[in-house]
Structure formats: C-alpha cells, structure tokens
Image (cartoon, rainbow, N blue to C red; front, side, top):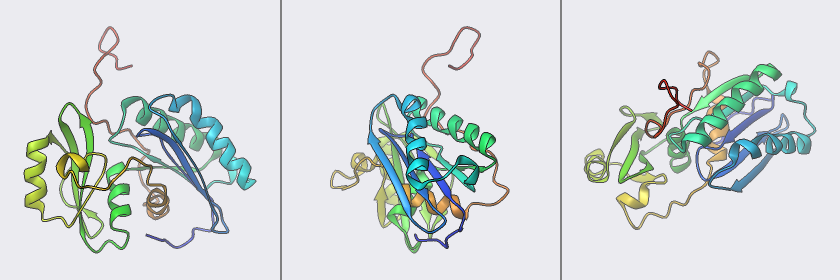
Length: 218
C-alpha cells in the first residue's frame, strides 16, 4: 500500500461512516491521524479536527498539495458534510480536492499489494448492501446495490479471496472486519490519483428519505 512520498503535504478526511477521521502526511513522511467514533455530528466536529491536525504538523492550509475525501457510499449526512468541507477547503487553500471511493479504499486496505480479488460490501441497512469487486487493485464492474441474498450470490460467483467492508458480516458471519476509517489507504489513493481528477461528489447508499417542498434534497 505504501506509495512514493509526494514531498508535498496531503490531507485526507473520512466522515462517511460512524466516525470523524483524518490523516495528514507531511512532506517528511510523518503521518498524523485523528479518529473519533461518532454516529452523527461529523459536520460540527470536522473543522476543529482538521485544524488540530494542521496545528500538530505546524502547517498552514495553503501548504497542502491535495485534500482527499472519502465519498462513500456511507451515511447521507456524513458523506455530504465531508465532501462539501473538502471542496471548500481546497477552494480556500489552493489545494486539489480528490474524491476517493470508500469501497476502493477498503479494497486497497484488504489487499495492499493489489495481488488478489476483493469483494467490498457496505451495509446500506434495510437488508441491502452496496458492493463492488476489485481484482488486482482495479474495480471489476460497477458499484451495485442489492438485497443480501443477491449479494451472497454475487460473492460466490466472484471467486473473491477476500471480503471486507461494513456489510461483510452479513455475507459471512465469521468476517473479522470492524468499523473504522481506512486512512492509510485513503492517503495512498489520494497521492496516486490522476492530476485531472474531477471534483469530489458524494456517493450515497440510497436516495434520501425526505425532501423539502418542491423536491429539493436537504
């Protein structure tokens, strides 16, 4: 998973799950992380967390090269908050904002050498999973949302030798995966992203349950 050092500071944030987490790789290779467990409230906690990371490193936001953000699938509010914050900070600092699929990050974490095949599943609740297969570090097919039974059939057909993600235990009760932010993988994917990558956009597990009058999504 280790990537060549950019020699330019890189910040990644992840609020897509039950956490508010971030990591900062400094130009000298030091990695500083903050990771707090929380079900909600990431929008309020994110800015102070990033300020603390930068303060510990002795960096100003203008010194950042890239700002990576986990774009989901994940919680609606958390994913939206993280993506909006990353874009705003990038605009203010001059850094490049990079969107990183949470499924890709978890797959890289499970297969850091990109030599195997990984079935990555996110628990979307209501007996549904959002999943994707990765082979040798590359996505094999699109992100798919299905019920648990269909995901089990897809897992069996995929021949994947590794299973990861918050939905893993629903497919295999013996899965040892636990909720956490894959910060090291996010750093690696942020550093290796294409220089012309589009601005990050959130990927939701499902459409929001509610809308404001006129169909506007909150």
